[in-house]
Length: 251
Image (tube, rainbow, N blue to C red; front, side, top):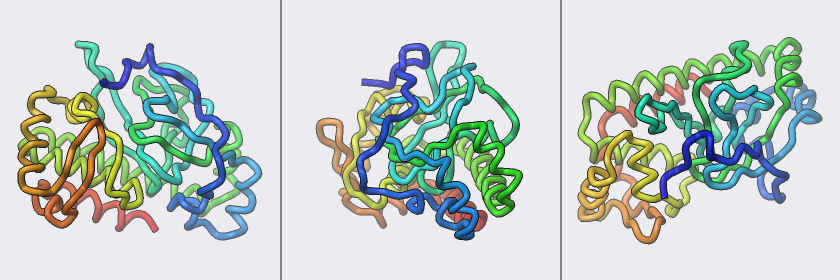
């Protein structure tokens, strides 16, 4: 079933996670000088957000920022017709809560777990205080913000210029990257249609083409990547552009 609209989604903000990942599974935190990471650690709490649990909601105060260790977050805006459409995704290469870095207290957008997320969570006030005394931390977050803005711009161009099957391949590749190469991840056609801003019938046709080519297998809400190299060949060039930009800007 598709993700609930923002006013129906659960705004849980995460719950304590079981052991298994650490803050250094996040690329930004892992790249920090040891002394800066040690200063941040007392303010970091490891939490887990299940499928469709929200990080933040439209117009609501931003109380935390999150540094994913594993999983995928979708960033969405709601259009006048009432549908929520994805404009970017975030995984362990970045953080959720760029708005707090830029001085905002709320946003007309939402973010939720597209694939269940384990993350280091920091209270927004502690985050703002940390920016002033941890220069490497601040600089890394600004570089990630640039990479995120590049992703938003590239996604907008891609959605306008490229056919649905190529966009579908790009989206699957980006999700595959964020689940640490796991071949299987949960996904429904309704959900993918919402993420791509198209009708479910269009997604069904695109998935059938990729499946017939032996690149993926889709059964009972689970997506399996069978041929990663083939999926990259089937994607539009935007996947390569985005990956190169993230590698250029981030450690």
